[in-house]
Structures are given as C-alpha cells and as structure tokens.
Length: 77
Image (cartoon, rainbow, N blue to C red; front, side, top):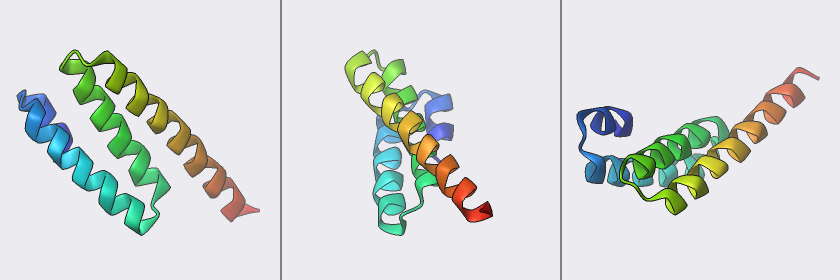
C-alpha cells in the first residue's frame, strides 16, 4: 500500500502506511518483509527531500535484507 501511495505522490500517507507495516512486521519478526517496508519508507523520505531520514531507512533496509538472506541460508543448512 505504501508503494502505491508513493507512486501516486501521496507521500505523507505513504509514510503512515510504511510505519504501520514496519510495526506489524516487527511484531511478526518477519525480517524479509521488514526490509521491504524500510526500503519503501526510505524511498518516500527521499522523494520528500528528507535525505537524513532517507539514508537512515535505506541503510536499515540494506541491513534487514542481509539478515533475511542469512536466515534463508541457515534454513538450507
């Protein structure tokens, strides 16, 4: 939903939905989905010109996706 709102240019609503998704994925401990939500939020902040926030969340997305890959590798061992 956040990505769709971002594409429509409704950045404030995109931030709200991304924050909700992050909270839900944290509760579910879903690191892969959490990485995607951080990426969406970082991209939206970038579009808003909030580069500090964008960098913070894009870095969190990168770290979270790395965690997801490690979890997937451990599942195959």
